Image (cartoon, helix red, strand yellow):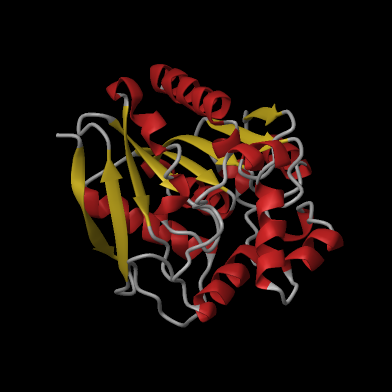
Length: 272
């Protein structure tokens, strides 16, 4: 059996959270957490890499407000998204999973590891931030480029923050990292607020999972300085910076980043 049918979990507040499971049924579970305002398709280009050698089965879910999940018009938070992740693991009968979160997904992963240490094996935090007053903020020029009124200009600015010009020239799309195209505007605002309000600084020293921090050296969307902050704050965390990579390093630097994660998870599994 190569994959399980998609289904949905019920969150603590009754919201329906759609999830997807792929890969070898006997593989160790790996929970993949997407970026802000994105559904599970964020991982489309690289997901199969984690199924190599029958090692892992991957689990994703659509954040509330995205994909096939419910879209209540109420405040969201990264801590709530982490609780939704627990509901998905419960629905699948998974007691413990390795967790790989990128961008806002890395923020969600911080809460998951801090609040539910028994549910997290190894932890990978990619292109993410501790949030709050200690975090390194993106520059005003980046903010202005994403706040313009011209949709095409904003999309181009986002593309250039995610990928290098060289990669874009050879990969014309479609792109699955630019946001859920059918996400309601109110849900986009709720996601932005959830990400902006994230602050896990105080709980990071309590994370017990073996942790790898990954980041591109040319990430202006989520400044690279945040990788150093996380690596210093999470006990015994390892740090690897991908030279020249931007925010979507996991896709553009697929071969290198994917191998780093797989080797890290394998080593963590041997020493657990």
